[in-house]
Amino acid sequence: MIQNDKDTDKMGKMIAYQVRAISLNVWRESVRDRLLHLLAASGILLIFSALVLGEMAIGERQRVIQNCGLFVIGLWGLVTVIYTGSNILKREIRQKTIYMVLSRPVTRPVFLIGKFFGSVSVLFSLFCVLAAAWMILLYLFSVPISSAHLISLTFIFGEWVLLAALSLFFASFTSPILHNFFLIGLTFLGHWSNDLYIFSENTHSQGLKILLKCIFYILPNLEALNFREAALYHLTVSNALLAEGAIVLLGWTLSALFAANLIFMKRKLI
Image (cartoon, rainbow, N blue to C red; front, top):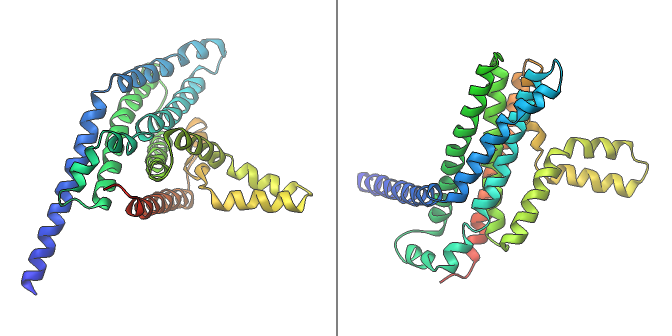
């Protein structure tokens, strides 16, 4: 019994080390990428471009700065996930580095989870840069930072993590072009899911009603992670809405990773 516990503990430490090594390698490769630096710089530039829009909106400068910053941070997550995720597995297969990794005592689930956490670490680095730039802008223009701002930023990054999991799922069985198409479509439909449900209730066509409701229940409701309106209008976010957002985030992220692992296990690589 003691020996089994020691073996289990040793195996757990080895898996943790492998995941950490793979994720660190993904992060190192990404931070050397000049295009990723360009993405960060362009994101900061767009956040500060809110100053120009704020001057055009008389009496609404603070609201424009907040709205533009949250929009850019949310959009840049999708752009970064598309760029880093479309080739995350394809590049490994094309360069044949995956054969060297999997020929060692590294299982496919460990390899996939390592890639996921590596992508999340890259996204977190970029998120911190963009969020810091936005916070500095808010401070310079005396915009009070409330808990709603922090909640909104937290769930924006949560959406980035969810998109990274979905990206890994699509990358496990599609080409980079289809990966990008599916991810963009899923993102926009996910944010329109509440509107689709309202349309389904108002339409007189039974077939269209069924179709729209199927889309609503099949796709992730990304609007459950959207608390930007609460940040803009200083609204109180209830615990029920926070719990709903956390459940959507956790449930869909784990489901996407599980599905990606099932598909990747069946792929013929070696």
